[in-house]
Image 1 (cartoon, rainbow, N blue to C red):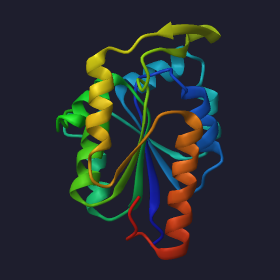
Image 2 (image 1 turned 90 degrees about the vertical axis):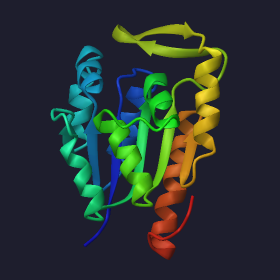
Image 3 (image 1 turned 90 degrees about the horizontal axis):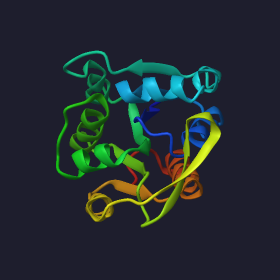
Length: 186
């Protein structure tokens, strides 16, 4: 059985367009949408881009996040969470697993599946895409930046601070898997 890449999307528009474009270049991916992600994708008009990826899509529709059982079955070599809202980062940093995405992250850690997280709030000042192609300045709070730093200390977890670094981390991980198998570390 060929293991797949699991990719979780949260409810952020920050680099969502670019994340979906990156997804279109990858093979063997399962996409997991939080409830907010499903809303944001429609609000931003990105449903055609999601559909164009051609990947299987799972949505957060169950109270117990049933799709996480796929991690127990060893179906994935890597989890990517991109883009990840400050809310999701905070929950992951403090061990909450009360949604599909945070459950995926928790179960990836518990099954020793490596994770790559693209945090939205990584600098004191950022430009982010809002609906209808508007760009807005955002100023992450100190707590948001601290949570990103906390998440960086997690085992088997790499945190990307921009879309280029996200792409680089994914390509490095896929090269590792191709060369040495799935038991490599990030």
